[in-house]
Figure 1 (cartoon, rainbow, N blue to C red):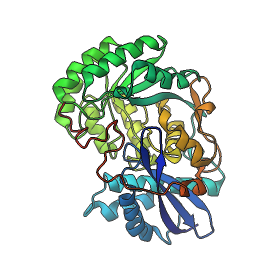
Figure 2: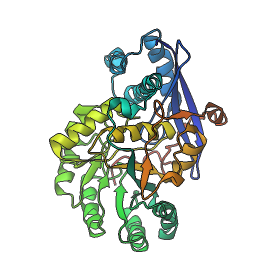
Figure 3: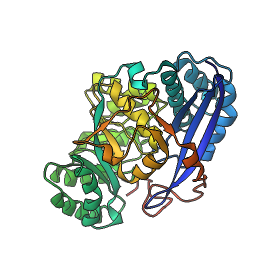
Figure 4: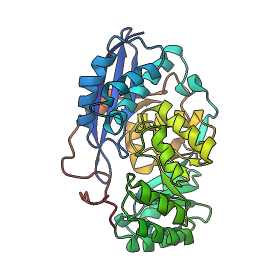
Length: 388
């Protein structure tokens, strides 16, 4: 089985709040077998055409004609090809993630087994937490209504997002905590908004509300500040969606981060995210909860990641992305209606068990975000500077 072509498929999908850019990859072999993957930059794939160019102009010719026997030799070839000039992290790793996932999909389909069965499957379903939106988007009743869609399916954990006006957000959060059942745990995403001092101050308020972790309160490059904040924080600190490889995972774990959030569609692929998870759990005793915030193939790849790592007992499930999961995929169902007692089944069909619906994707042609910052409530360019 040899690789014939690698085709990037950028999409702009309409969501309730704003359109989301997504990037899928289709790999075709010489015998006509097709594998699919997806890249993520932490929230969809904002600059999908940039990654698509890298895949089309660099990764495709590098792997054309290569025999697919194992995944890692091929992804290592891609990594080494860009390492010196472009680098092997950020967009190179994100694009490589999509290719790696598609290669695993092909191997699974060729063998008639699921990706997680090929690697070593330890579970058939995984608990999800409901990942919701920024608190400044509405009153507590608005957020309660969103999260209740998940709690009605037995989900007992949810996450909301703080913004620059965090004093106002805390008032909404306090009211929301009172509206939710007492057995529903809450987590907070800081979206790299805050300084070290604000992070520590906020953590004390969050501890009073029983918040389980404080995710990315500061920019992920502020290693020294993260370490200081993690030592002083009154709640566990979480990072992972902007990390690339085991070395960067170790760096944040050494800094005192106690929740690691790898993402197979970001970090370099399923194999890389799996190694990050294993190191976090075995060497540091950290909690491992995969980040998932893109389309159906990113979700599915991370479900297979969770199925192969005993320490992963919980994954993110973005409520606002359910329409994309349902419309853009064929195969195993990924909608919220599939969740039973808070658990989402892991697809067991050949490969990922989920394919891209190319006809559906074609209905949503890609439109660049230009100057807008996607994933915010207001699209502000300075939203995530870490200076609040």
